[in-house]
Image (cartoon, helix red, strand yellow):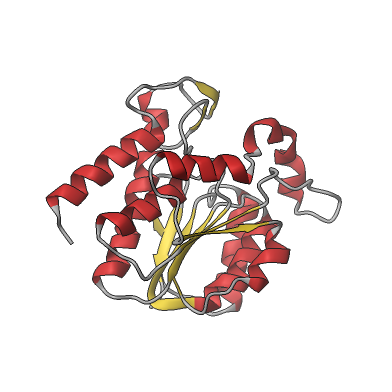
Length: 246
């Protein structure tokens, strides 16, 4: 699906979304604070619109362009969007290829991570992500503004504000082509799989951003086992994985 103009646009978009151009400082770093950490999504950037890194953005572009090339039916969705960067890239891919009949859905609480109470997975209770909500919580209005700054806020961008358990069962879509999970918690990951995977078209992709986290990977493997999913998972960058539905 090669198009020189589209390739140039999307390559620049990924550099802007990760802000490798101006190299904003990190708020928190998983390992060394350098360009490699930003490439691999191992830091929390102070300015950039995504924290997933270049490798995961390249994988996301590959998945979206694959379903477009193969005419795999369905919309695109991300569960857990932070500042919106990955979803912005999905919308940019649709625009670059002149696609008008698919939407990008953004599901998020837009108020940060839920409190991991005594009913939560032990690893979620240990990590206590909600203690970082001063950084992780990004209001819906800010995400909409981020889309607008790229000229990508339009009727093909759909928002689902609220907790996944409440919103995902109500999503008004029959088919999905790409599902990107970035909810960190066991319950958030399971809620997304239970409500979205049955809508995934054959040939569509599931991307799991937080597979390196034990609670997230346990939810994924439990769902895969209980539903007889045998398509092999493929690593992306040592943190995330994906598979294509057969």
